[in-house]
Each structure stands twice: as structure tokens, then as C-alpha cells.
Image: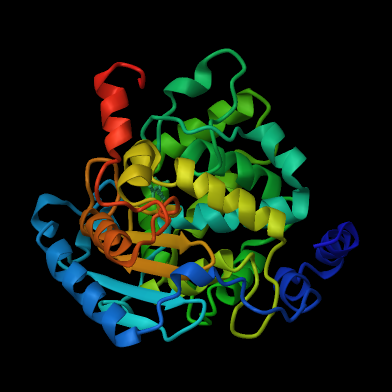
Amino acid sequence: MTDAGSREIRQGLSEDRELHEKLVERNTIHMEPVIDKRYQLRETSKATEIIQKAMDLAREEIPRGRVATYIPELGKVDPHQLGICFYPLKGDKITLGDYDVRFTMQSVSKVIMLIVALEICGSKKVFKKVGMEPSGEAFDSLVELDVNDSKPYNPLINSGALAVCGLLLPEVSFQDMLRYTRNVCSDMGVELNEDVFDSEMKSCSRNRSIAYLLQSKGIIQTDVEDTLRFYTKMCSMSVNAESLANLGRKLANDGVSASDGKRYMSSGTARIVKTLMLTCGMYDGSGTFAIKVGIPSKSGVGGGLLSVSDKRAGIGVFGPALDAQGNSIAGCKLLREISNELRLNLFFDPEWDKEELNEDVINDIRNGSVI
Ligand code: GLN
């Protein structure tokens, strides 16, 4: 997007706050999908078979996980559900299992908060308030925050997202954000789940502490309670695996819908968001996930996973039984299997995928000239 384009978005926002129109309609540029030709999945039936097999394997993980209970309303969700929507840039949408069951976005919404903040405020202003490093801590940690004048590590953990909300609040309303979410997820059914919202507002002492700490450090300058409500509403938007795949597909295509050529965010924003998803999207499980799966992803404690196979596909997963880090336990297994079988790892290249280790390298290692 040109500078003039983003200026227009900002002006438009202050005029009438119709965020979605500014982002969606004024930036129509009709472009072809930016396909990575090496990896396109031409046979839908073969891919469906592979994903179905991966689902069967992933289901076995469910008994090892637990639904989140620190938000009491989430504790009522059936842990046995599992669904996926896999939507290639070119090719048919594949939907399996509980792909249309609604759940709350939770931390997946941090991606949307970040997109809008980058578009409206620009990256300089955003990264003045929040860093771009993985934290290695739990998603709701506050330990690192009270050290010197440190800012939150990144926008994809609670402290960072609350800081981002402090930037958004003077610019947009929750209704603006809801409309943009509906558009970018191509899902007019996205709603605020009032029960989950109320439930979390009654049990958010940790987030409240983080937000007040951020205020004391001058990072949040808006009203803390309003900021907290805005953040919690964003977490309580209900989506399904299909909506997340639609969002992932636009991120995979440089911020542009591969269906109708409309631009939903600038290239720069799409790139920053995908990079942070790879390095920080799975909290303190991000490094392991990057090695085992290698697909930029963002999880939420509602069981959602948004994954972006760049230039190839958007993937949405729903599996509410979580692992110790708060990531969908079956969802991670499912993505790992799919990534291996469909060769979706970001660093996989058929040219380099030699089954056998190179003899010369082995000899070099033995001789001590490597490592
Ligand atoms: N609403 C949740 C919270 O703030 C989101 C956390 C998550 O999905 N990891 O705790």
C-alpha cells in the first residue's frame, strides 16, 4: 500500500470510523494470487485423504489435553472436538470434522489487533510500545514486565496485546474491529460471545494487573478498564476453523484475497504479522513448533489455530483440548502431520530434501572439521 493509501485509511477512520470500508473497498487492486509454484497441491482428493489420515492420528492426542478452565465458560466446551479447514490459494477448500463449530478467538484475535494497529498507527508507533522478540514465558506472564523500563516482549502475548489495545482505543471502536474481522475472515457470522466475555471479565485479575502495570510504565495511556474490556471483547469473538482459514489465506497471499483481488492490509503488515507468528505465535512453545511444523501460526485458548502456509494455503484448526502451553494439543499434531506429508515447512525445498545424509558431510563431522 502506498503512503497515500494508508493516509487515506487513517483520515477515513477519523471521519467516520468505517474501518472495514477503508481497508476493504478503497484498496481494491485485483491481483493474481502470489502462488509458490513448487508446492501447489493440485489433487484435492489426495490432499483430503492425507488430511483425513492426519486427523485420525491427531485425535489420539486429545485425552492428553485439557480445555481451559481459568475462564469458567471455556471449561464447558466439549474437549473431543476437532476440525480443520485447509484452503489453498489455488484449488478447492477442504473441510473436515468440526470445521464449522463456533468457538471464541481468544489469542488468535491478537493477530487482528496487530494488523489494524500497524495499518492505523504504523510500525514505528506500534514497536515503540511493544517489542518484537519471543518471550519464552507463559502467555499471561508479568515477570519480565517489572524489570527496569522494559516493554512487553511482543504483540502476541497478553501484555503486548494489551499495549496494542491502548493504541487502538482512541482510533477505533469494538464495532469497527468486529466489522473488519468479519471482512478479513470472510465470515459475516462473527459475533461477540457475551457469555464468554462476561465470564472472562469476572476472572481476569491477571490481565487487569498487567494492564495497570503497563499504565504505571506509561505504555498504556488510555483508561485501563476500557482497554481491558476492549481486549477481552476481541478475545470473545466467535469464529470457526473456516473463518480462520479465510484469514490465513489472505495473509498467505500478501494481504490480498485470492478470490476477488481485494486488499485487506498492506504487504508490509502481512510480512510483519507472519514473521511474528513464526517466532512468537505459539507462546513458549514457538521454537519447538517452528522446528517441528515450520508454518507461521497463532493459537488461542479457545482451541483455535490460525496457520499461514505462505503463497500456498490458509489453514484454520479447532481442537479445544490444550497442552501445557495453552496450544491445541491435537491441532499441533494435526499441523505437524500435514506439514510433513504436504511438505509445508517454510524451509523445506524439494531440491534440498535428500533422504540420505551427504557422505562428505558425515566424514567432515567425523574428522571434526564441521561443528
Ligand atoms: N483471553 C485470554 C487471556 O487473556 C486469551 C489467552 C490465550 O488465548 N492464550 O487470557
